[in-house]
Every structure is written in structure tokens, then in C-alpha cells.
Image 1 (cartoon, rainbow, N blue to C red):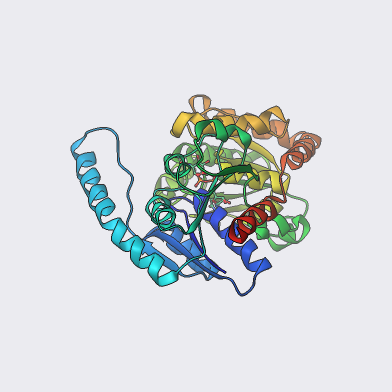
Image 2: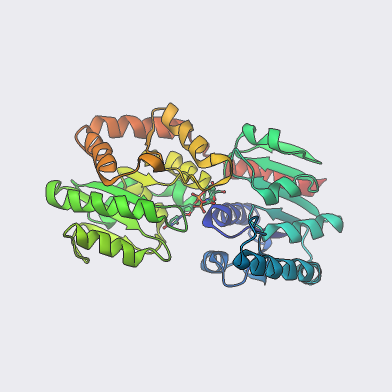
Length: 373
Ligand SMILES: CC(=O)N[C@H]1[C@@H](OP(=O)(O)OP(=O)(O)OC[C@H]2O[C@@H](n3ccc(=O)[nH]c3=O)[C@H](O)[C@@H]2O)O[C@H](CO)[C@@H](O)[C@@H]1O
């Protein structure tokens, strides 16, 4: 069995592809699996870490407004588009896949299209209730569309089957044990807050998290905090902390660019503060955690807010909209939770109830069925 996976740009598209690859490998240890991604991108790092080969190509999205910078970008994107059929042909010839699976992001577009044109079996997975542009276009061409939630279906015109499977979650996240994870970080008897602004980081979230850390360092000695500030967020984050009287390194504060061991950190956490990307939320549910969600307002159709409302309505999370986001607003929410540990537990239980923990297997079954046709 030879399966090619394509997804990229952010971990929200890459991690689902990795989860699918690992599930196929579990069922077929001899399966040949490779990925397609952008050169110099996040997928190069994340896929490389899992030990899968990655074919690289250059695919850029087009920008809608007409500033001089965007015109130059769009010309480059056009150049990539013109070059992509040749690169796709070479990849498909070299790897000769039986199945090509896309998990969103611009890079998935050309290779899935090229595979479908050549009669190779194709499937896509959409993580959000509001589908991304690549998947919207691909749905019309691929054999099977897999969805995290049924709401996405009304935005698509699938050529083939359309099946709701839930979001694929990396097995390490599903299997991580709170007790062992807390012991690893020496968190016994402490309250652990985990925060991150999606896979790319988020400046507004960094700012209020720095304020929160300054507060808990002064007033809550039993609170520990793990935070990812994202690729370019370090300097501003450190400056904001310093303004609050906190210098790094500091006991109880674990601040990094990117959390590589999210499985362990999620299992160890009592409270998660994050954006509301689809995979993050599925992982919070799988880990059964209480959450404070700050949806990104800069995404299509405000879909992160809708993602977050699912947890809020289930009694698993509170939402702070970015327009209302201040240090004191976040501190008040965190205080109300740490002063009522029973609420943290109740939110965690409500979160668990939302989890679809067999999504990997559901997806595997759908792909196996497609391959057997
Ligand atoms: C700004 C934007 O376009 N965001 C989209 C993007 O978000 P984003 O890429 O942030 O994706 P998600 O929130 O869905 O997933 C983030 C993934 O990165 C991992 N992680 C994150 C931070 C870190 O330090 N370490 C780490 O491992 C998380 O565990 C998770 O597996 O894709 C999601 C899924 O299509 C969409 O719902 C989001 O709206």
C-alpha cells in the first residue's frame, strides 16, 4: 500500500495528516507513506520529526487586496502555479501512490488535483465546520470527502462520498497519562496552566498571558505555567513580562517558541488557554481539559468562534473574544477557575464528553474501503 499525504502551512493541517499516516502504519506496518509539503515550511519540521519522507514543492495562496507587496506575492504565486503540474507529475511518477489524501492548506491543491486527473484514488479531510478554500475546490474532484463535523457539508459540492469521521488526533495525545506527565514536570500539588496561540503563536494572546504570569507569580504560588509564544513572538512577550516585573528564566514559568511535547503538556495541564483552531479543540476534548478560548477573529467566516461555542455551550470552556481581551479579563477568568477547583473538574468532564476518540479508526476504515474498490 502506497499512500501520499499532503497538508501544510500550519500544524492544524499537518498534524491530522500525521495522525492518519500513523494509523495506516498501525494497520499496515509495511505500508509506504510519504508526504508532500512546501519547502522551508512547518511541515518540513513536523513530518521530518515523525520519520516520513517529504516531497517538497512551492505553492502559495493568492492575496485578495492589491497593495504593491501583494502584487509581487501574487506574481510569485502565479509562477508556482505554472510550475506545479510538472512537479506533481514527477512526484506521482516517482512515488506511484495507490491513494493520495489531502488535509488542507494550499500545498494540498495541485497534487490532489493531479492525482484525481490521473485516476489515482483521492480523499480529503476537512477539520473545520467552515471548510478552507483548498478543500472547497478539491471536494468537486476527489473520490471521498471526510469531515470533522456535519455542518461543513453544506459548503461543499462533493463529487464522491461525503462521510463525517471527526478529527484525526495523534495517538500520543490520546494515550498521554496525566499522572506521569505531571510527575515529569514536577507538578504534584500545583495547578498547571498551559497556553499557546495556535501553531503559529498569537501576539494578543502572548500579551495577556504575560500579564497573567506577572499576576500569578505575585499572588498564586501554587500555579505553574507552560506557554508557547510562537515563531516571532519572543521579544515582545519577554518585554511585556519584564514590564510586569518578571524576568525569565523563572521557576514555575516554562516559556518556549513551540511546544514539541503537546501530548505530555496537555495531559499535565489543569487549564488550557488557547486560540480555537479545530485540532487544538479536538485535542482539548480528547484530553478532557477545561479551557479558556480566545478565538482568532482573523479567519474565514469567524470559524474559530463557532468552534469555541461548541465547548462553551457544553460547559467545557469560557470564551473571551479578542475585542474584550485584556490582562485583567483573563486574570479574572483564571482566578474564578483556580478558586473553584470543582469547576475545573466539571469543565474537564464536559470536555471529555465531546471527544470523538475513534476518529482515526473511522478515517482508516473509509480510506481502506476506498482502496478496496
Ligand atoms: C490562523 C489560522 O488559520 N488557524 C487555523 C489553523 O490553526 P492552527 O494551525 O493553529 O491549528 P489547530 O489549532 O487546529 O492545531 C494546532 C496544532 O498545533 C499543535 N501545537 C500548537 C502549538 C504548539 O506550541 N505546539 C503544538 O504542538 C496543537 O497541539 C495542534 O495539534 O488550522 C486549523 C485547522 O484547520 C483552523 O481551525 C484554524 O482556524
